[in-house]
Image (cartoon, rainbow, N blue to C red):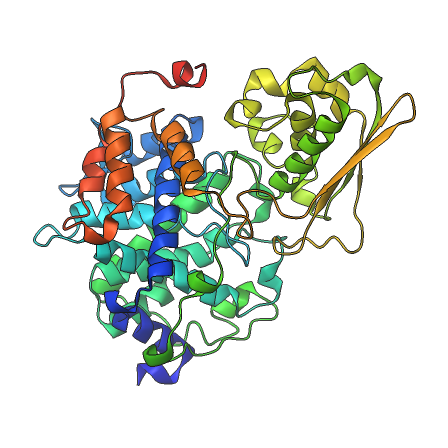
Length: 472
């Protein structure tokens, strides 16, 4: 009966998929996503927005608690641990990005780690259990976005993780909590009523709450479904249901399990090299290449000799910020990231410090930037490009174009560079033992008997301060 509707087909797939359906490619790609998400989340525990989320979570008490990453002496009720950890993951906009456009992992992984530690005390959840639930959470997000052509482009009205991320979190939680098909369907219906967040809050401290809320609300939806709460049984079929988010919504039933293939097998994620909106990676790489044409590797860029900087970028208003005033605006500014790369040769975690943002040389360069939006440059992470041209006062012009940056799914980070990124991020919050333990555990996750070992590592905090780590 459930499988006769789109919603029913989702409930069936969530309930019936098992570890035997996981391909080697999907396992390997999802382990990379898990490692990266843990790393950026641990780095994010240094941010102001994370600490405010933790202060909020402390209001609530429960006999059942889960780990707050990087905080050895703090546990919160599972809903609020998932919330705080989800906020940490997106606090610097350093988490992975998929196509169609969303941040898939941050809405799902904090939910599953909270569940594995606190909500199933009488049974051990294996690494394969975690991988299966994680991939179901990712899969649901990807399937829902493919019901709309609009979803393929950089968003204009709402932030996708707050919509599809909430649904993916609910699906993943339903799987790990072993809900039946009817409960899986209800979890999706309940999650839909938690979904949504406007793009107007991009480039503010509120944007990371979108991921935190997706993790928390998805878990809450699954728990309420387990307790018998009911919603619309055709929530994914209706224009007034999940279709309310997309003008061109065209849902379809999922394929039968006998011929099922994972979207992650077809479409990998992008993993960022520095903490900013994904579009910034194109413009930073192009600007870095231009810099090499003007000066040598270690030479200082003569900013006073530059007459004009032209950026050819897609027309996406919320990342067109000529003079960003905060780190969050800087992470969403083509102009800032291009000028930072021109000035320093690359963009890094340190590029978004108050000191870096307020440098006179950077402000001087920002004042020389002009942006153009060629008609062929579409606001789509599969199709966009960025071109940077620098004209000197002597009349010479240097130009470079980036079509695919290193870290994009067409040019993925090597395993060595992914682990290097994780270790840098994680070591700002954890001991060396814990960092190495997480790398080893995730690397062999499909062989791990009890995935709650991750929570044990996530509590082993290093005594070295964040600021001293970044100064090394």
